[in-house]
Length: 173
Image 1 (cartoon, helix red, strand yellow):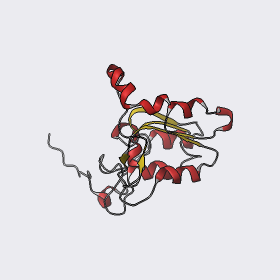
Image 2 (cartoon, rainbow, N blue to C red):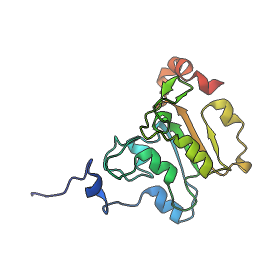
Image 3 (tube, one colour):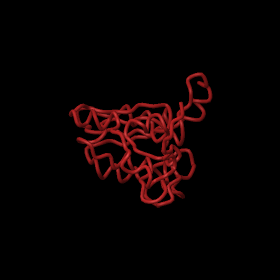
């Protein structure tokens, strides 16, 4: 058999109108609580598939044309009352270039927008955290939303425990 199909990868305009609802969009329409917990960057292909529509998995902090990048789609998620809990790595995708935080590394966003601050303004009763000590002080009864970006990129694997203590020392503070 021979099949013809249109490949919309990295085609911003061509991909429009071909979106499929994500699992979090469906859950929010059903008035369910929603969340993402990942050891990868929240904007990486697998966790991002739960909330984002992107013609290219590499559009984590910058997209072509008038398409939105994946980090911006996370912050702009408009189904129901928004994503309730999101924890993982990938802080760099939310930070503007030149912004330095925790690991001493610069963000990747070229639009100059700090999406962490945008998220905090959007959810004034939410909590944005970057380490374990901040996590320990969360009061769930007073927190509507939680965004935890624990690492600059992906989280470290359990098998690399010694490296976790060295590279993610900020989680212990």
